[in-house]
Length: 435
Image 1: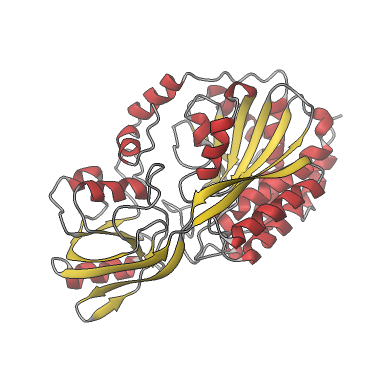
Image 2 (image 1 turned 180 degrees about the vertical axis):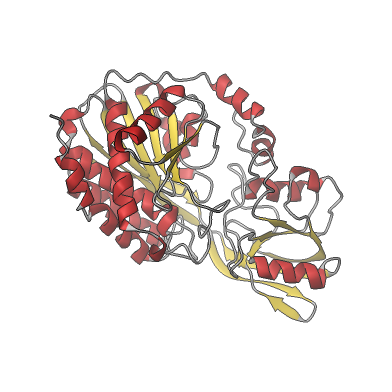
C-alpha cells in the first residue's frame, strides 16, 4: 500500500507557513537591502533545519537602488505616485499623453519630450500580455521624457516594478507608478498640458545572494526547485514571492523525509534579486551545466488562488506530469503550454532546459495585489498553501523518478516559439533577446 502519512503531516505542518511569516515580518526585502540579506540567511537556516544538506549562500554583486521621494506636479496640484525601481533620479517637465493600454502600435508617434502614461494591462482581445518594461522601452525609443505606469485595478494603489536592462541596469528616463484613480484624474484634468515628474533615489553598489541546499541521492543529474527571496520595498511581498520561498522550504521538509523515493537529486535554490531583472537566476545560469539539470520547477505566486497554474513552455512531458498530479489528487490545475519569459525559470528554459513556471490562478487579469502596498499576508490562506504543497511535492517526486524522461530542447526551438507567440519584439527592445 502506498505510504500517505506524509500527506497528513503536510496538512498539519506549520513549517512553510511559519517561514512565510518570517519573511513578511522582515519588512523591506528589496534586492541588495539588509532585509533581503536577512531573508537569504534565514532561508538558508530554514532549509538546513528541515533536513536539506549543504545549505550555503552564494553572494554576488548587483546594481543597488534605494527609494527616495517622488512626485507628479500638475497645475497647482501634487499627485501621489511611487518611483519604479531602477528609475534614474531626475526631474522633467513635458506634455502629458495618455496612450491607453500602451500597445506597441500606440507608440508609433513622435513622443519627444512628452510624459507618457500607460495602463498596467492589455485589452482582452490582445494576443499576449505586454510587460511593463516593454512599454517603458517603447516610450524611451519614441523619445518620451518620463513614463507613468497606471494601475488598471481600482482601489487607489499605485503599482511598482523595475525598469532597466541587463546592460544598463538604471533606466533612461524617470518612471513612476500611479493608481487607477490618479491616472484617470491626470487624464481628465491635465492631458495635453505640461506636468512635472520628479524621482529622487540612490544607486549604490550592493550585494545579493542565492541559497543552495540539496536532498536525495548524489546523482549525475538534478532537479532545481526555485523561487525568489526579494520583494518590492513598498509591501511585505507575501504573495510575490514569500509564498514561493516558503513553498521551497516546505517541499524541502517533505522531500527530506521522502528521500529514499528520489532517484534524482533535488537542489533547492531560492534566488536573490529577481524583481530587478532575474539577476540571481541569471548569475546561477551563467555557471550551470544545463545538461545536468533534468528540469527546473520555479514557484512565483503560488497560493494566491486555489488552482495551480503551470506554464510548461511547450514541453509535452511537463504538461503530462502536471495534469497527472492534478488527476491523482482530484485537485484543480491549469496547464498553459506557452512561453513565459519572466521569472527565475527563464535563464534556464531559454537555453532548452525543461522548466515550469508555477503560479496560481486568480479571477482578475494581471498581478492583482502584487507589486502594490496590498501584497500582504492577510490575502493568503494556509489551507491553500498546504494543498498545493502536497501536489508540488508529489510532482517533484514524479520528475525525479528514473523512468521520467523530459528531453531538452535546442535553443533554436525556444526562439522559434517566442517568435511564433510574438514575444520576440518586446524581448529585443528590453535587451532580453539572447539568440
